[in-house]
Amino acid sequence: MIKKRLVLRFPPDLIDQPITYQLVKEYDLMVNILQGTVTPHEEGRLVVEIGGERKAVEKGLAYLSRLGVELQPLARDVHWHPAKCTHCTVCVPLCPTRAFTVSRENMTVSFDKNRCIACELCVRACPYKAIEILF
Ligand code: SF4
Ligand code: SF4
Image 1 (tube, rainbow, N blue to C red):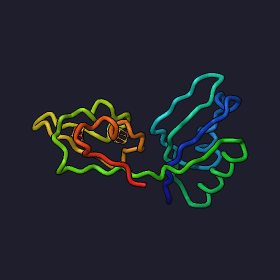
Image 2 (image 1 turned 120 degrees about the vertical axis):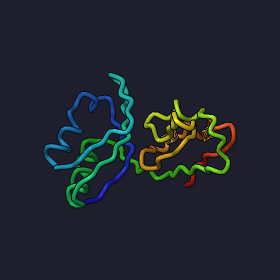
Image 3 (image 1 turned 45 degrees about the vertical axis):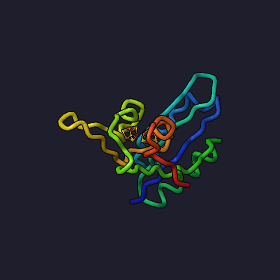
């Protein structure tokens, strides 16, 4: 079993197609949509985690390429520096995947790297430069 995090860019003519359904049904893959923006008649963009047996993942990605979907690995890595963080919570409502959360009990912020899709919203917003992107 492997997992890949990818940014998928769909040309306008593919937006209405049940592509993720096909990946699940025909290629036996797990598709977790982490973030998506799809506007009718324009390009669509999905950040997904695709999981399954290695061969199945390869076949599924080849299927996407044949259709004309542009694939880009989510290669950037977000690093949180707890020592610099003041727990101001600015990043918490900005994060679309709830990678940053705040404990209501002690009002401390924590970061779950596995949920992060490297959208960079928090990186730009953090007033204390406690979050950085590693390439
Ligand atoms: S915005 Fe920066 S300083 Fe504030 S809670 Fe988030 S990581 Fe910490
Ligand atoms: S880059 Fe920041 S805002 Fe974007 S998903 Fe990761 S933790 Fe959340």
